[in-house]
Length: 51
Image 1 (cartoon, rainbow, N blue to C red):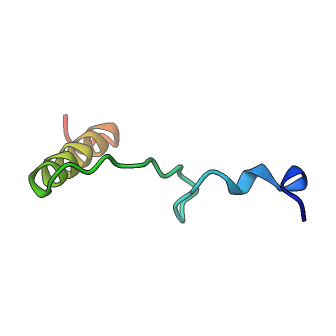
Image 2: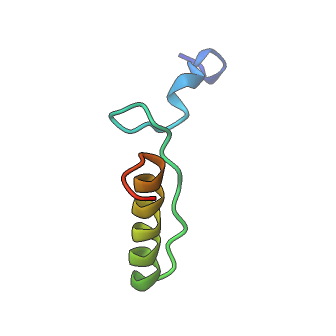
């Protein structure tokens, strides 16, 4: 199969729930932990768990 006929739906990485996986710009371990918890808090607020 040539690249011209390739299905582009395989170009976007998805998690098992069908959500697009965004690349992460790793800087250091401390930043990774801080970014993780910031994302957790944002998701909890989005889901109405935290206000």
